[in-house]
Image (tube, rainbow, N blue to C red; front, side, top):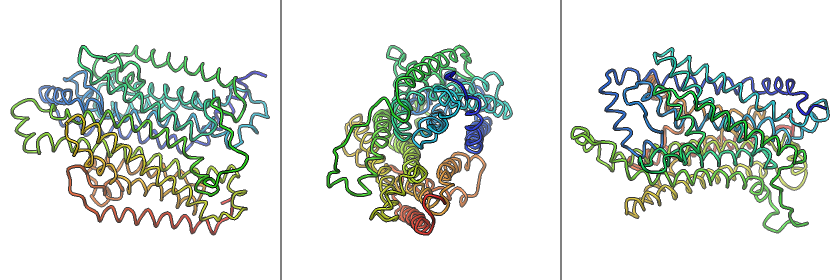
Length: 533
């Protein structure tokens, strides 16, 4: 039988399953790009103002590390899209990993791929279908993003280049996810490994962009995110970079196909270690079992976030280079000098990491539904383990895991920043600023747990809530929404530390909301059927 037989049917099946998820993500990306461009168009009406803003931006090593470099100071498009070209590419890459793993490794883990494979479906058809869905998604993203940017007044050629830059990042990470799906034996580990690779390539891009003219700027070319920025939308439009992205994707995809032929269905090339015949006393509990199931994923997330935090924390010491002119220095001093802007930079970085840690919390809490649909929960609950203990074991890992990620982020960023400025007292301030993000991440975990207990078919509402809260923070000020609407986001309640005063009451309310949501999930699970909702 042809190894690609049945690919078309699997593509149609994947599109049907993703008929809500993919359009929502596309709407979010296109809306963010168009809204950001529309808000910036009127800020720099003259070339002189654009040059001054771009030069100031490029002098701040910390901002260049976070977002990238403005390659044409005279270009309004290059200036307006610099933020989304850097941090926006992260979310583009995450979506690619989710799509590919969802339709490959997750299907094998759930046992559905074995049933499908018993029909007229070739060995390589599932992977091919997942990659085609991802490629089609990003081709559509490129077109829609370009149309959105053109609609708000940016040049058409640069808009298309920006759309292709995003699409290139997505296609590259779809290929990377195709490999991680072959290496691991479960979807969580595959996604975690993909996120770890994302953290590494983001750091490589940051190192290359912040290097001196005689330094290792070539490191940027080792990163798919760096390739996206080297398209240089609105600043020369390097169309040929797309050949690098597509060549990389072709080579990595070929490697993924080779790995498919070398492993058994349901197994990963990184073998699971055999355990002892009987469990140790420390493993004879639902919490210990949950930890065993989650630990590989958590360690992958920790590796990626820890490495990124080390670099960004070190670069915070250079924020004072953002202003060079006497007038700018005067404004700089009034705003609090280097300390004020450094604190603002650290608060922004830790806020972004808080959102990423929330994504881990959502993924970890959704493990409950995966255990149920795979029918592994029912045998466990047939023992002396109660429903409440089982649910709380996975919830505890999600809650403690997000807290551990933020603590690690604070330690990495705080220690690297303290070492750069020669002030050990800075580390505790940064650690505290990271930990205040934790209650907001727990609200997202609570949303998933409540959905699992009350309406398990809709646990994906956790992703929708995460995206919605991020959009409120990003687009709310642009559209001048009422403050009470923007305050619906838990991230809006987090004090912007370091720098701002610590307000305990909003954090307490976030904890109350998270506990209430989790309690609703526990009550719902105790009253519904297992495994059918």
